[in-house]
Image (cartoon, rainbow, N blue to C red):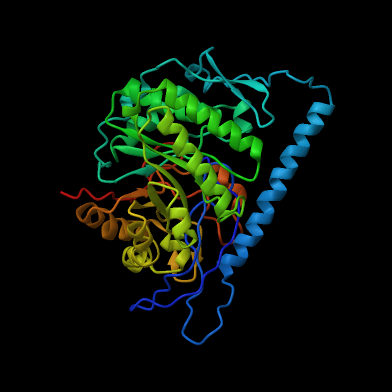
Amino acid sequence: MVGGHGGDAADTGGLLSGGVNTSVPLGENARGVGGGGGSAGNIVAAGTVKKESDWLASQKHSKKKTRIIAIIVVLILLLAIAGGIAAGVILTKKKPSSKSSSDNSNSSNDSTDSNGKKTTTPTSSKDTGKWKDYLDNPALHKVFHGIDYTPLDAQYPECLHKPPTQAQVNIDVAIMSQLTTRVRLYGTDCNQAEMVLDGIKTTGVDMKIWLGIWLDYNATTNARSLVHMYDILDKYPASMFEGVVVGNEVLFREDMTASALSTVLKEVKTNLTAKGINLPIGTSDLGSNWDSSLASSVDVLMANIHPFFGGVAAENASTWTMSFYDTNNLPKAKAASIRGMISEVGWPTEGGTLQGSVAGVDELNTFLNDWVCQKNKDGTEYFWFSAFDEPWKVMYNEPGKEWEDKWGLLDANRKIKANVVIPSCN
């Protein structure tokens, strides 16, 4: 979402009546800035020693790989500076291709880079009206409680050279408005939050956002994200927001301790109250990472739970997900007298198999049919991961495990995937 790096967690616990292990770490976003992720584990029978799952081992490898990628990016930037980029010089956007130039204008938004220096990220203020061509799609139904979303090209620092455009985001907003009335974001870099809010204004659709704030182990990044959050909340009316999500899978990646994260959450809550902003505050993490102390720091417990990474068959995914949530998360939310929700749940449409889970369209349809209408009926709050494929995540694919970039209901070209059937729920 702006999203995630790697991490690991492991718990032990009993089995549900159906042989389901409800104690394994489950979540999304083990992938890198912008979103992605997943979790799983091995079933533990009474009297046995828990063995590290194949998934968990891969996540440790993913964490190391992501950190290496981050180090390489930093080294490249440092080399560029040493090669003649003077301090304070603004990185400029490459000249757009003829294919995309019509979607860009000369406007820009000021922000700061990870070192606190002023930068200018080009954006588009021009409304081309193309979003109108994407309305009234009979294949789409407004049946999802919420949708997880990150605009294409919204990963920092790549967006300094190839930023998302307002025209593209307007199209995405128009499409998502036919699926849900609420969208969850993962960060504020590359002016993505402003673009989504402006897109809602331009299209006039019925939609609110959960504003996402990216946190990691970098104090400078965290400070920049929080300052940007306050600025956004000052500029846009509170009626456009449904809540604020401060951090995604921070504990899973081991970027911060639970104590440090709780301190940030409490400070945000205090500051928003002082500013007269009354919005629920949450942080999303693997379902198994929630404890009573963290729950006491938020207004809503947001658990990322992905049955695919639990290694279960699609026909058991809906039951498995709710069993995990009801066992691991709902009691903690009730004990803290706060709301509970599933902040990520979904299924990849291709890429391989993981134990009993098969990435495929048929499997996605099975899960959709078992989940969406029933969860709407029983009042479960959830965000479907995700609206669109995210092609930048292909870097995290591995042989036989090539699903990282294939979690969207629609492909990267904003077309609903072949044979995907979204329930109408009457």
